[in-house]
Amino acid sequence: MLQKLSIRNYALIDSVELELDKGLNIITGETGAGKSIMLGALSLILGQRAETKYFFNQDKKCIIEGWFLLSDQLLKGLFEENDLDFYKENILRREISTDGKSRAFINDTPVTLTVMKQIGERLIDIHSQHATLEISDPAFQLSVVDTLAGHQQILVDYRIKFKQYKQQQQLLTGLQEKAIEARNKQDYEQFLFNELELAELQSDEQEKLETELQMLNNAESIKRSLLMGYNLLGDEETAVLPILKEVISQLQQIEKFNTDYEALNERLRSSLIELKDIASELSGLEESIVFNPSRIEAIHIRLDLIYSLQQKHRVNSIPELLSIQEQLSENLADILSGDEEIERIIKELELMHTELERIAGKLSLNRSKAIEITEKSAGKVLQQVGMPNAKIKIEQSTAKELNKDGKDLISLLFSANSGQAPAPVAKVASGGELSRLMLAIKSIMAKHTSLPTLIFDEIDTGISGETALRVGDVIGELEKNMQVICITHLPQIAAKGNAHYFVYKNEQGERTTTGIRRLDNTARVDAIAEMLSGKKPGVSAMENAKDLLGYKN
Image 1 (spheres, rainbow, N blue to C red):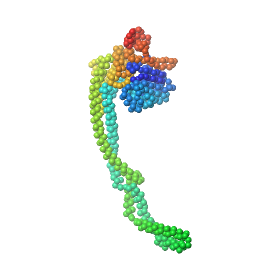
Image 2 (cartoon, rainbow, N blue to C red):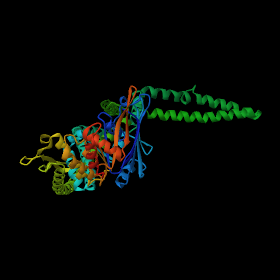
Image 3 (tube, rainbow, N blue to C red):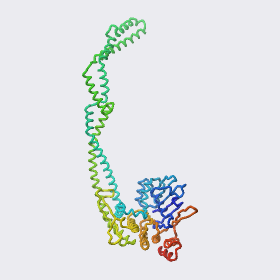
Image 4 (cartoon, rainbow, N blue to C red):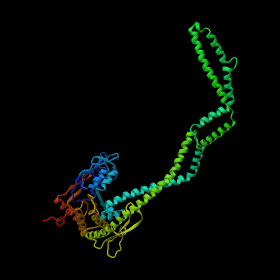
């Protein structure tokens, strides 16, 4: 229940604090005094958007706070889902700065407006005279039946499974689209893969082949240079090796005279050994060089294939071609595994659909039972509020496909008079009839819901006299199940309250402000009497007011 509401700097309100009763709270007041402003402020802590143009003082921020006493453990779970602390008394606060920036808090923890609205909808249901349009909404009509069916947990489980089902359907659609796209490319990719696989490419072969080809193309000049080098070292009269041998022989004759001569000659002997080895390698390399036209042709053919593949795939190296080959192999494998995954998901969806059909059937059965209860209960309340011949009929049909609520289509039909065939509400109900019909529905829903607070904003439009008394009785009954706040202009309804609050205007100079005060017993008599006969009520109006309030003289 809403224990207290604090409003600062909103519309005509400078500062107001309203402490509410746990039962039926009545709010009355002068026309234009700002009764509905209270609801506008309250809607801000229920997650509605705000505009700074409604500030009382454009130089200060607007602050709305609500203190809620909660005992519903289902709400505790909702708080925990959003990482919020849950207490017996919970505070919702909304701050709107002069620059239009808004901040929302629940128990001093910052939250988004989405979270505040999600929680606010579970705390308060505001029903205004304009909200009667809601009764024509199929979703609302279904929610009425579901409330009386009392299968909320089954419905929650169904919706979770249905959401998973839709997600799997989306996944399947995506995989099937990819599979079609892959199959369109499969033949071409298979051709490219086969071509690369047949080439049997080696990562380093291009460099080796290019080097070998360069050697073969220059075989004659290479062979000539190697042979000339060998001859200069050893095979000619002026070659290096014979001359070096002669130098060693000359130094050998004088080694004994000086150790330096011996050391130099030792170095010459080492050089002779190295040069002989070099000459031998030059000879071997020269002999290995063979001009081979067939090998040159084979290398050209191989390199042409490599270059052609690189050009086709727009790359410059064999490793890049091998990477493409691997990717093509993976793509082809994915097509096969994708088909297997599609088959698996199709079978899974069949099982999920069967389970959803089972739960939807259970929901349908529960709704069928609840429809009869709803029709009878609403009929009784309609009699109470002065519509003895009115009745509602709820038609249940089956949708072509499962949806988030199961497979039922609910249509609420209404007849206000005997002999009148039930028809869609919007076509046959007047404003006053709509108000009473909505009251009837809300009253029977209240007995099956854990909603802490219900607010009626002038739903008594179009009714008066004895009907107003009966409407007041029905509203008064609601307080047995929840806290009720009722903004009314009818004395018959106002007299039913446990607590009565009066909204008034203060005119100070050129500025008008709105205030609210709780009325004591004496002030309630005055207020009810004024509602009956206007300003300065006579004795009869005062007596009538006391009678309505049940006060004894």
